[in-house]
Image (cartoon, rainbow, N blue to C red):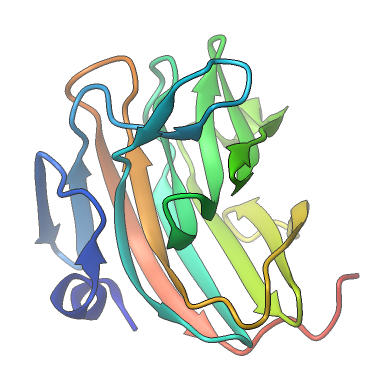
Length: 193
């Protein structure tokens, strides 16, 4: 499913300020204050990230590519797998403390967060891949055609009715526009390593 098909058949969890195709790319402008987080450490719940999602099978992988050309605090884009408001996984690149960080938030009632700096990815096309199979989602990411980096292995019940796709949000500013360059579906990865 390419970006045009996802835009045509997918559903927004929260509509963005603007979204439209431009030469095969999907430009999404986030609303100021949009985010996805539940409780942990901060004590708040945000469930208004702009996620464009479609059904994800129990044994399927999804990839999202985007340009890492944003640089403001907490700007973020990537991939999301959503079951409901209390069960979801988002992974991608978020700017934190002045640096792009590849990471994931896994939420089962409450959220957690893990990140690692990827300064060398700034200005490049980034791809995030989530491979769902059995009781797990394996998340990998890379810039350009580099080797995949393992970001996270997270639990997800095999019977969960999940939807997946691209997301972006701008918790602390207005004016973030993310350029998504690809959305692909495929068979899940054959192994973790």
